[in-house]
Length: 224
Image 1: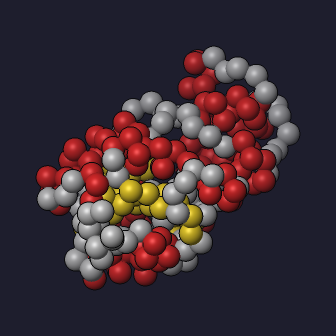
Image 2 (image 1 turned 180 degrees about the vertical axis):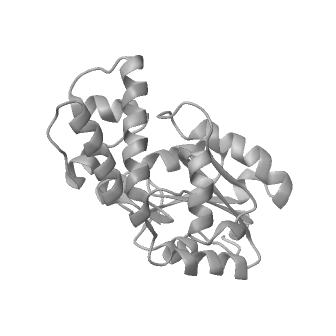
């Protein structure tokens, strides 16, 4: 296999430790719909992408598009309100430093709204680590694969890399699906989006820390 030349980080639940904030924002949606609050275990059990399907599992009914747009706005308002308490994952800065020290490039791809993502990354002091930062610029809730494809179209010329030389690190099954779609490698971080058994069933390495993700992902060394 090719040497890893570039790493694409996921944001929510990977570099950003925000799972409890996600549940808090989700409960703002539940309250808006007159439903009882949910908890992290239920979130992990039901979570999937497209996110609209997750809400339909949670609500136990279909959700029309006009209602989905409303729910998405309520969620993002609740999440934004909670973000003042957001912090990076415990070893995020160490992992970013390791990648830089190896002379490899790195970028950030998030399904969080782009105009809200950038100031958050800046506030947490890691903006300069990335050759490119992309958040969601259109409607939300869909799969990550087309967004990763578009992200790499910008990143690969900057980094002189090919898809097989890219490592994706994320916390969701959708990250692994997106990586497979573009021909990149993937390591999943057990950051809270899914029960670990579901992550392990995908067939890519699953790790407990971000620094471990670099090690098992073969970053900085040729992988036979």
